[in-house]
Each structure stands twice: as C-alpha cells, then as structure tokens.
Length: 369
Image (cartoon, rainbow, N blue to C red; front, side, top):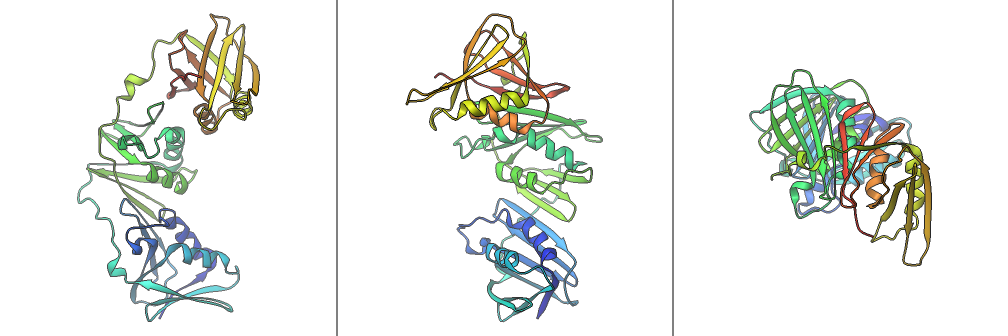
C-alpha cells in the first residue's frame, strides 16, 4: 500500500527534523524508530525519547486512507541520504515491511507497530503561553547554553533556567564554576514563573530555530514545556529541582573595567591553550602597565606567552582561569569587544559583559595553577 511519493529532499526535511533526538541505544527498542502517521495527504513524523518529543508535518501523502507505522530512524535516514536526487521516492507498507523505492534502488525495512510506540502525554492546561521571534529565542539560548553542566549529580544544573517575568524572559545556566545570564523583552508576557529546560531540549531548539522573525509559540505547565513553530512541535519534560540563586553569584560594585577586542583576545587564548594539559586547562592572566599578559605551561616545562595592549594602569592583578571557560563565551558572543570587570583579589570572579547590552553577564571563578 503506497503511503508517500515525493522527492528525496522533501522526505528528508521532516525526517531530519525529528531524528536528532533518537538515541542510538535505547532501553525500549521501538524508541530507535520514527513514527510515521499518514492521514490523507498529511504525513506526520514523530520521534520520542520519553523526555523530549518532536513532531513535524508534511503534505505528500498518497490516497485518502489513514495509515501509521514505525521504522528504524537512523537506517531510514541513511538510506534516503544515499539515494540519488533524481525522480520521486515511493514509500509503501506491505506485510509489516516498509518498502523504499527510487528508480532502480529498492529497500525493504522491518517495521514495528505504531500502536506500541509511546508518545508524550501533553498537559491539559498550560499555565503560561506567549510568543516571540525565533531569532530572539535562538540568540537567548546561544548566549547562555555553554555554561550548562554535563551529567552533574546536581541534576538541576544539567539544564537552562528560563525565568518568565512581566514583559521579559531571562535565561541562566551554570555548572558551578561559571554562570551565564541574559534576558530579552517580550511583549504581552504577563506570567511569572521559572522552568529548568533540559540540556538536550536546549540543543535541539538551537538546531531547529530559524534566524528570522517568524514566531515561536511557547507554552508552560507544571513539569512540561512546548514549543510550536513552522510545522514543528517540540514537547519536553522539565527538570525538577531548585536552581541556585543566580542573583547572588553575579558580582556588583566592581570598579575596574577594561575593554578588550574580542577577536584578538580569542586568538591569544587559543594559542596559549595549545600548551595547557588536558587535566589542567589553566592560563595565567596578568594585568598591569596597560598590558594583559597571558601565559600557560605544562608538565614538559613548555611555555606560551601572549601580550595584548589594554587600558589598565591600576594596581597589578595576577589571576588564573580555565581557558575553556573563557573561549566558550568568546565563541558565542559576536561583538567587536568584550568588557572585563575585575577586583584586586586573586579569589574574585571575573565579570564579562558586552558593550550596549546590560543584560548579558558571564561570571567565571578563578583557579589555582
């Protein structure tokens, strides 16, 4: 029974959208599959890992009947990518096998029943709903995502805190050694609530959101968040737990500020990072005499030294940081210069901001080397 007939790229687009969350190893074998639902000419592709679910729609179904099945997601994707981009691809369902035909290429893939595929139950009532441009949400995530923890036993750090306030959305992330904060104005937002979005969901949204002004609808309920944009719907569980008080972490009252060209600082740190060790990614920063001196060394007694001219004629400061933490922020903000705010204390964190944006703040704790 013919389900779909369309060009290879037309089928690849919705499939690629959902396959990103499919894990290569699953406790439930069917979760390695993608669910295909056809209702007339409307076809839905759905993937789910029990935490995040992505659905997208297309209109290349054949016939008026209703059909559904599941097939191995990665295998199906690899086959479509390998097919020649000429003529239509035909997908047929016969005897529990999905047939893929394109010119002289034919594949028969094993399927599992769509009735056995688990789907996420969505909230019956959403506590908060608002919309904002996709470009704005993507930029907000891009400015803070790199500070999320990875597999931390403090599970609430393995995600991004979204704070809804009247007229504003904040995003905060921290792994305990650094913290990134940003916010953006949102018209019509009246709700006030917090939600910790899982790391995987944040990365999927960064991949899927477009760099344009088209809207993304965001709905929040207890334990769940939903994003709807274009032909895509992403539903995710939220991380339970109490996020740290980020306001206490962000330094105030710093009196020493220097502006540094972002590209020059990034290049110097990248060169100094070459001679750091995998376990100890520390670089030493010395401020004084209108110079920023960057140095690193390793167990083989190799050394790297860099100098940048800066406007700093105050008391010298000698402090060390994890170079990866510094490079992460420089790779994710696209300004010509960054502002460093410091204190004459080797134990004080550095506050990194950008000109003309009072809401972006990045705090990095020093380290001992």
